[in-house]
Structures are given as structure tokens and as C-alpha cells.
Amino acid sequence: MKFLKIAVFFIGLSTFAQGKVGAVDIDYIMSKMPEMTIVQTQLGSYGKQLDVDLNKKIDAYKILAEDYKKGEPTFTPEQKKEKQEALLNLDADIQKFQQNGAKLMEIKQQEYLKPLYQKIGVALEKIAQAQNYTQVLQATQDIVYLDPNYDLTIPILNELGITITAEEGGK
Image 1 (cartoon, rainbow, N blue to C red):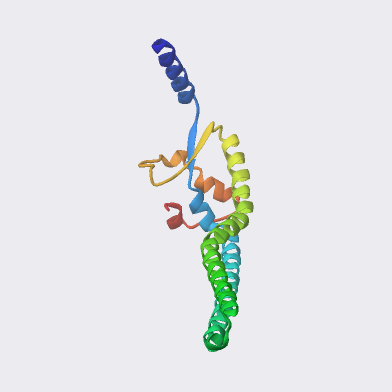
Image 2: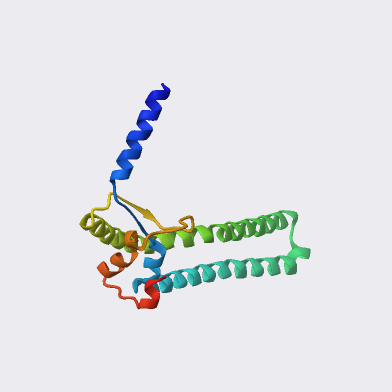
């Protein structure tokens, strides 16, 4: 059994050694895409709309609370209970809306960025096939060293028609 594991390990290692591996910095490419300004504007508008909706809920809560305070002495026990439940429900709705706000922004961001990722994916596939790469990894902070000859970031930017200055090329 041990022999089998060792054999599989060496076969995998030799297969890996025969491939050409590159890396790409997707975040850098995204930051250089002109479409990102549109995405940021759209996200800003969506965030402002969420804020407007939240403020409407808060204003409605304040009005309901003021009405309750003003009319409390004249309310019957049933009316008090009804008004208190309405306040509690509105408060819970506000809290839920606040909790979901971040999730809604994340969903919207993914929706807006999806076409950009697809565009990068098409360019990446074209470059990887043209240069015979068998694997392409995403460059992260975990990579300590990357030979510039295996960095596909600049070729992908060129494929996308994005020009960068020499200073930017060094990232």
C-alpha cells in the first residue's frame, strides 16, 4: 500500500514537472480595467439607495414612536399592545435590513464584476493556450517570488487592450 502511494506521488510529481505553470494577478488587472469606474459608480448608487431605504424605515420608526409617546395616556391596553408590537416589528425590520445590507452589496458587487471576470478569463485562456501553459495560478500575497517570465498579468492586460506605463508594469 505504501508503495502505491509513493508511486502515485512520483507520477503526479513528474506530470506536474512536465507542465508549464504561470501566475496572474487578477486584482491588479481589475484595478486597471476602465470598466471598474462604472462598477464603482453603480455600487455607490446602489449603496445610496440602500441608505435611502434604511432612512425611510428609521423615519417611519421615529414617527411611530412619537405617536406612541403622545397618545400613550389615552390608549386602551389593547391599543398600547398593538402599537408596541408595531414598534417592535419595525425595529426588527430595521435591524434585519441593516444586517442584510452588507450581503446585498456583496451580491450586487458580484453581479457587476462577473462580466469583467469573464472578460479576463477569455483573455487568460487565449494567452495560456498560445504560450502553452498547463496551469495558471492566481498571484497572491502567499507567493514569495515569481519569475517575471511566468507572470501573465501584463500579457493579459495587453490582450484586453489596456496599456500601462513602465512604472506600473513593475506593479
